[in-house]
Image (cartoon, rainbow, N blue to C red; front, side, top):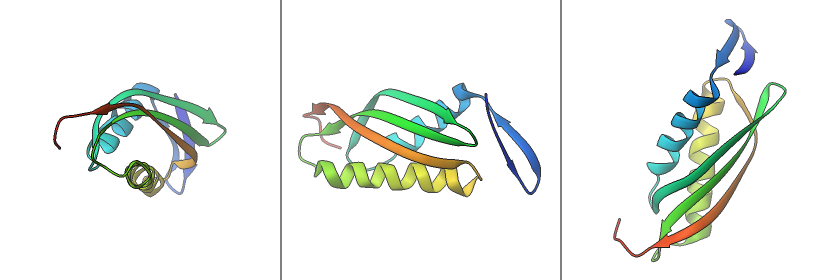
Length: 98
């Protein structure tokens, strides 16, 4: 369970839900063909996220990583959860079109 406080009080989110949310956000980004792993580490009222993605062969990997990082951090920060860091690793390249 991950807890953080905002103007409404203390909010607690299960790691299972947060992993599903991060997975959904990352997979919705252009160039991501799948997710091979998500790790979330609580760091006080912040989180560190490690993503292992599969990407399409024909995409610019730094651009995909930037898009994923921006989208995940933006959406989680918007909800009030502080994202301290996001590390993205490319585990596989997919030859399928996106």
